[in-house]
Image (cartoon, rainbow, N blue to C red; front, side, top):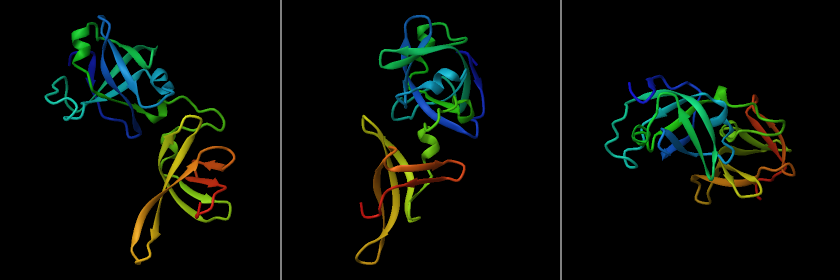
Amino acid sequence: MSLGLKPSALPDDAIEVGRILDAWGVKGWLKILPHSTAPDALFSSKTWFLQAPDAKFRPGFKAFTGTVSLAVEESKVHSDSVVAKIIGLDDRTAAEELRGCRIFLSRSSFPAASTDEYYWVDLIGLNVVNREGVALGQVRDLMATGPHSVLCVEYTAIQEDGTSATLERMIPFVAVYVDAVDIPGKRITVDWQPDY
């Protein structure tokens, strides 16, 4: 396979972390759009896994099929994106062939988070309970609001007509409301009430 790509299986713990925007420069560098404002995982991992772009984004993609891996020689921040040099990818034309590809990393390759810091991907799916033990729902997503993140917690509620509906509550992910995060126990304890 050309372009420094090797057919590969996607790791069981693979997380999508960004996509290739375009070629950068004339020596085969790639311009990356990371899904995170802190793309440390892209810098710490020397093996990236690619899958083809969505057909609606780039119809007729033919650079490869399935999943491929590539070896990262160097990656760094440049302006509002990340740029990377891939081993075996040496010219702009070859780099352009990968435009739109989705980038995945093995979760085990992420750098360790500092104390009281968490990767969003580790919080999604955790059950949220308040100090009284009342279940508030399950984290379905997080949202960046500038100064802090917000937990998007999905729960089921019984409507006035007796039917159930899936609703969402927003809980600021800050120390004043979040008492404890227990990732192994799959639980977040918060100072929050169901009627907030």
